[in-house]
Length: 390
Ligand SMILES: O=C(O)CCC(=O)C(=O)O
Ligand SMILES: [Fe+2]
Image 1 (spheres, rainbow, N blue to C red):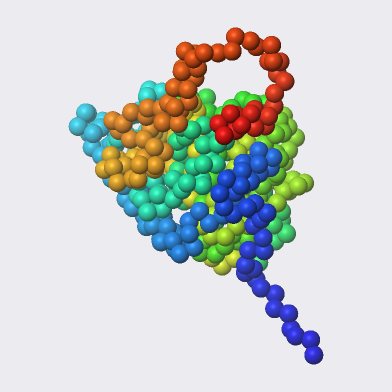
Image 2 (cartoon, protein in one colour; image 1 turned 45 degrees about the vertical axis):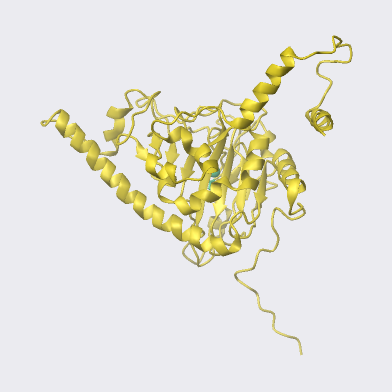
């Protein structure tokens, strides 16, 4: 007698995008770097250890509630201040109310006119953002001095109502992320401050920022329950799904697309140029997720690109008392958003500059006949450097 086959509606992770990448040491980091360079993304597996995922997830859920309360308080304070200034003022409590404080968009105002950053109320989860493997990869791709520019703790994908139509299954929302989101989050001519910055097409062939999606379970992420869609290699294509001249329909499938699978606690990290899309969650369970974007010191993030869940282009800040409880590594990532803190260049950059300066004064060979400008690839340069430092 043949046994009845049980089709599991909630398959365990069938594979992970990280499959094939060694799991330890430099080889693991090198695998992620290769994947980022060639495919435009990688999945760093189990950044949050299995037995800590539930705590991180609960912390994010609780944080979301606290943030709503904080923002309401901030809004009241703003109105109070306005009343003190002018008791007869007609207080505009509509979403346009913040326009007054955007008079100087280059130097946005301090709290309460700024809004509290999402990370400020998710301090347990927050510490994972400074996990050594994530930072190693981000620093190798971007720069030794990286910062987190956008934090969105509300990136869950909720189960859709059944039955699901073919039309729904075909639905995509292809885009690339800030600063490569060509919509710049809804700019318009009447409100010129409302612009998060968008790199002009064709994008320079450089990774300017890394978008990370932190999958916080409770289930592992599969194509069924919210595994993000991605088009491998699209970071190198001059076209863009939101490119007005590119003839790409951002709402339907693109050849070569695939969905991410990863164990809960993993991080999907992508070059912000990569074309990707959210996915229908066909399971019965919320796919909890947080999104944040790591960028090098030179990306203009304090003037542009501010964002947290529920915010828009308003300046965000991390309260000093919260920041003081962050670990030193995490502090480096958020220092630029803390009142009264100077975001001086980090140690790695200072060492690099010191080496370059000492070279100026050292004995040099006095012969450049071996140099053929333009003849060395980045890979050759990296081998050469490793040899010198061995
Ligand atoms: O939730 C996801 O899977 C994708 C989210 C995303 O693309 C975004 O936040 O920019
Ligand atoms: Fe995105």
